[in-house]
Amino acid sequence: MRDPNDFAAGWPRALLKVHQALLPPELGLGWTPYLWLAYTGFLFFPFLFGPSDSTALAATLATLIVFLPLYFMGFQGRARLTRFTVAGLTLLGMVTATFNSGASAYFIYAASFAGFSGPPRLAMRYVGFIVLAAAVETWLLDLSPVFLAVTAIVSTMVGLSNIYFRQMDLKSRELKASQEEVERLAAMAERERIARDLHDLLGHTLSSVALKAELARKLLDRDIEQARIELSEVERIARNATAEVRQAVSGYRACTVSGEAIRGRRNLESLGVGFIARLPQDLALIPELDNVLGLVLREALTNVARHAGAGSCRVLLESTASVHRLTVEDDGRGANQPGLDDGSGLAGMRERLANVGGSLELDGSPMGGLRLRAAIPNEEPRDVDVEAGAPAT
Image (cartoon, rainbow, N blue to C red; front, side, top):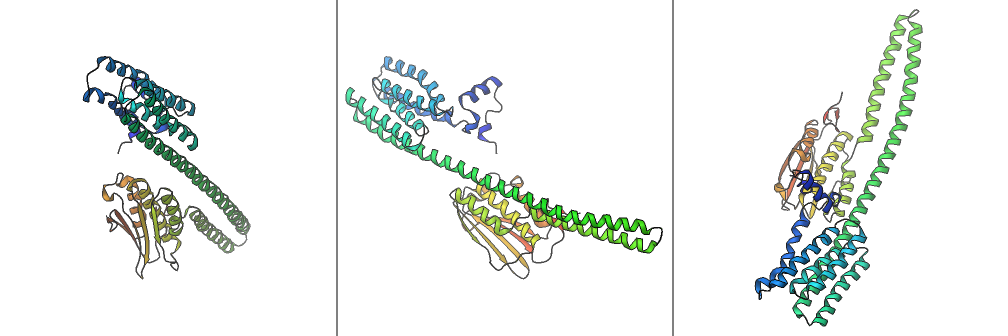
C-alpha cells in the first residue's frame, strides 16, 4: 500500500516544491490539511440559506486571501508561527463576524491550532481567549446567540482534543526514544560481552593451535606418526573452536519466547493494545527451538502493532510430547489488514520454521481478528542458522 505521505511523488517538480514548502514532509501529514480546508465551506452557508448580499460575499472571498497564508503558516512546526496563526485567525474571525455569521469557522480553525501552540496550560489559555473574543464581539455587536454557542462549543471541543492529541504524540515520541535508548544500550552491552567472549576463546585456542603446530613441525623429521597425531589434535582444536565461536555468536543473536513476550507487552501496551501471554513456567525449550519461536513471536507481534489495528492480543505457548505450538491472536482487522503478505515477514517465519521441521498457519481468530499458529516438532533440530533461515555451514 502506498504511503499517503508519498502521494505527491508524481507531481511536477515545481508543484512538489510548493507542496513541501506549505506542508513540511517531516510533519507526516500528507494531503490531509488540504481536506481540512473544506470546513471553510461553512463561511458560505449564510448566503445559501439566507438573503443574497453580493458585498458580503465579495468580502468573505477576500478574507480567504488572508486566511490561506495564516492557515499554512500554522503547519511550519514552530511555536511562534503557530501562535501568530492563532492570533491572526482570531482577529480574522472577529472582522468577518461583522458581516458574516459563518465566521465561526475562523474561530474554530484558530482553536485547532491553539492546541499545538505550546504546553497544555498555555494552549488552554489560548482556547479560552478565542472563546472570550467571540463572546465579547457577540455582546458588543449584538450578534446571534447561535453564533456564540456554535463558536464556543466547537472551538472548545476542537482545541481540547488537539491539546490531548499533542500530549499523546509527545509521550509516544518520548517512549519511543526511551525504548530505542534501552535497546541501544542493551546492544552495546551484548557487543562488549561477545567481544570479551571471543577474545578469551580465540586467545586460548589460537595459542594452543600455535603450540601444537610448532610441535608437529619439529616432529616431522624425527617422528612422523607423532607429528600426524599432533596435526590431528590441531584439527580437533580448530573444529571445537569453530563450534564454540558459532555458539557464542548464536548466543549474541538469539532471542527467546519469554524475552519477546516481555518486549511485545511493552510495545503493545504503549500503543494502548491489551496484551495477555500464557507461557508455561516449567517449559524448557532447547536453545535452537526457543530462538526460532522467539523470532516468529517477534515478527507476529510487530505485525499486530503495525497493521492489525487491534485492541487486544493474546499469546499462548503449549507443549506436548510431540510438538511445541505457539499461537498469537488478536481482535483486529484479520485477513483484511494492510501489509499481510510475504512482505510482512511471513515468508521469513515459514523459512525458519521449515528448517526445524515446523509449519505456520493463518486463520480467523475467535477474538475476531487474525490467528497465527506456529508448530515445531518436539525433537532435536538440525544445526541451522535461525537468523538467516538457512542450514548452517
